[in-house]
Image (tube, rainbow, N blue to C red; front, side, top):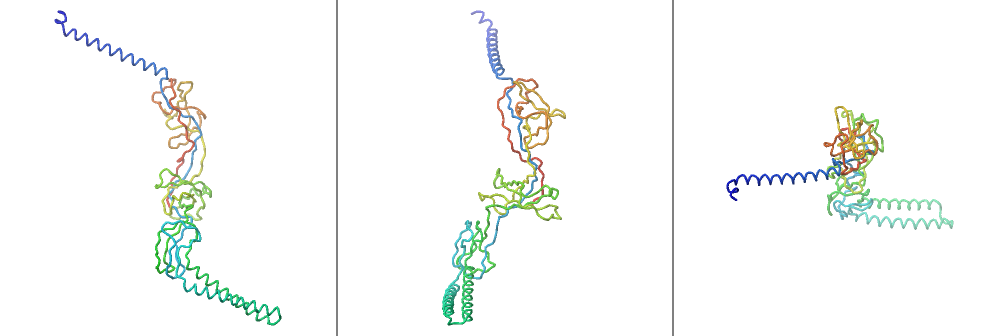
Length: 371
């Protein structure tokens, strides 16, 4: 006890040194355990992907305008007053539906008169025919009655046509626009009632440079994108190639047809157009697996738990993928993540295998003029 009282600093130093030694021993033991666990599972965790076929697409990009398959401004054939409106804004109608009824009191009266005249003329014709059979009348009299009956019938058909002109019908099935009239409106042939658009399919007009004219034909695939529907692609095909080249822009107009079963596309929309010229499948690997060294390209493969560096020759590229011309074969597993820690012969353990998509858009992308 007297020694401790005489040398307290020395005793404190010994206790601190002992504590530090214990801490270092515990830390070293924990690191050894962690290292042992890592060695038991492989030195480097990596993510791999298989060399697999990938779709490469050559295409021309342009800007196009959507048009209705059929479009018309509904107007009246005669000048008359509206008695009844049978539609509302944005209604879908079928061909032949009556949209507007016009005043027809005079035509209805004339129709009744014309029917009466037809009935009378028919009876007179039948009576003379009976007399002819009994040889009591001349043939010329029968001809006169036949002419009168036919004239009455023609007049009746004319009245029916005039009545039909006072029923404004939908010329085809489609979607109506805004209603511009009300009951009591005096219509003339130049007064627009509403619009009617058939948007069950959409015409898409766009232009491409004349240099691509030889490679464009009816039936080619067309993909369209709209800013209104991000991530959604509308598929169609070329319907018609224009017969003339614009001498100012040196472009040719193309008309494509797009399906529009969900009625999402509307006339007048601006669409980004991708005209597919060629679509082929080639072997490819993810771009993240490529290791460039000077003028050469390499990829690390996993062979029996070891990393093997192999040179390959690349071709075309898409966003995220590189075509393999030679050096790799289908089914090879290439490392896509963990490359920074890899050296030839390094021991590796596969953490995950990433599937390779078979589709690609954007190869050989060429920009054309808009329409």
